[in-house]
Image 1 (cartoon, rainbow, N blue to C red):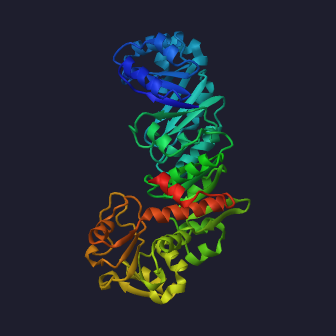
Image 2 (cartoon, rainbow, N blue to C red):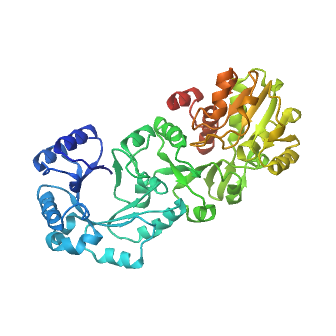
Image 3 (cartoon, rainbow, N blue to C red):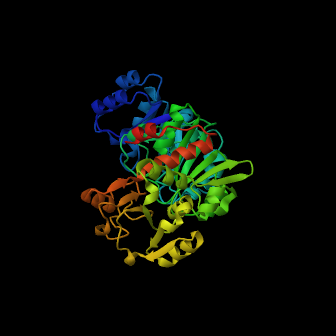
Amino acid sequence: MRVLTLMLKTNQDLFQKINEYSYFDGFEIRGDKMVEPLDFDTLRLACKNKLLIYTCREENKDIKEIKTQYVDALNFGFDYVDCDIKSWEKLSDAIVELKEYLILSYHNFEEAKFSEHLLKVFEENPAQVKKIALMPHDTSQAFICLNKFERISGKKVLVLMGGMGQWSRLCYKNFGSEWSYFCLDEVAPGQVSTKQLKNEHYPQSKKDTSVYGIIGDPVEHSLSPKAHNFFFEKNKINAQYLRFPTTNLPEFFYCLPNFVNGLSVTMPHKQSVMSYCSKLDPLAKSCGSVNTLKRTADGFIGFNTDALGLRFAIKSRVENWQDYKILILGAGGVARAALSVFCDLEGQITIANRTKEKADYLANEFNVDCIDISEIKDLSNTIIIQATACGMGEDISSPIDVELLDKSSILFETVYFPSHTPMVHHANKIGAQVIYGQDLFIAQAIEQQKIWFDGECLDFLELEKELS
């Protein structure tokens, strides 16, 4: 069940939002945020057949007032009242007899740990539902929490907070949580707003839903959830795609739940993730990097769809592309993919990187030329594949002086967020052709869908329209 938390001040605002978001399975009413008495009679009519939870926190209301409001809420038909474990002793005398309507909740806003003592307290407490909210600092820590959560008997809810725990709010049924909480606007990192829920096509969570996702750091701006969830929705596939930000690959793969069947891999893990593959696709082996994982009975198979995406994007956007020189900026996973897929043009390819030693290594491996960034002079009639992280997110740097771009240059900017990096801005200014990062993203995402679902995938123009 999806529960929408409403932290509003007036009955008018409350009923307006309940009517607007009537497609939710239930509502959590934050009584401690209201400045007027709740209109229980109207609420009961507005929320017929909906799960209703009433919550007041002690830091916002006097404990006597909370007791009164909780008893009133239950008398007027709320399904549950949420009692924080810190307030239990003060409230239990008034509500303990209504145990079948109680949620006992524990919050740890500092870390993703809960003790054996807490598990014992939960087992002994008469509340009908046990709720735990924790703050992981890596997705791998969040995975560890699932093991302890399994040990709690009866009805239970797990909320993993922050960006490292957002995925848990979307696949909650996979690990036995009764429901999940959503919000009108993201008021804290990791919360899922109604806008994000709709925009990224997240389905209702089910116990048997297959989960796919993206690993990397950062991943919050990734278009992958929107692209792949749109594919699942259109083709009626029982799956969903989530964000798994992580910097700790050993612990991530050690704790990775079995319900995760495939992963996209982004920076900085495209090379290091190879050691967690039981087998590598020939192209991934040639690239020396992996951006796609498919789970099999024998482990994960590693693939590289960046390479196919790069070649597709250039072939579809540039006439007579074989006649151009190619300059690759960078020495990471995307640069490796470009070198691998354009190996038939090795006499026309040059690689440059801020750390020249890394570029030298790749140049020797793929038998291409290598120069220092400072040596770049003439970029006329050159396809520049910008394969660094420069310009990504809030970064406003450029790997080279943008003034080096020529009107006859073709800039392939592999960064897609934002779409207009400093290099793109200047290329547009001087009238040079630009191949945007979204082209690469779409092409490689379609290849991932083919890998995961035996050739089934979206059409390029169809996905391009969805992401525009």
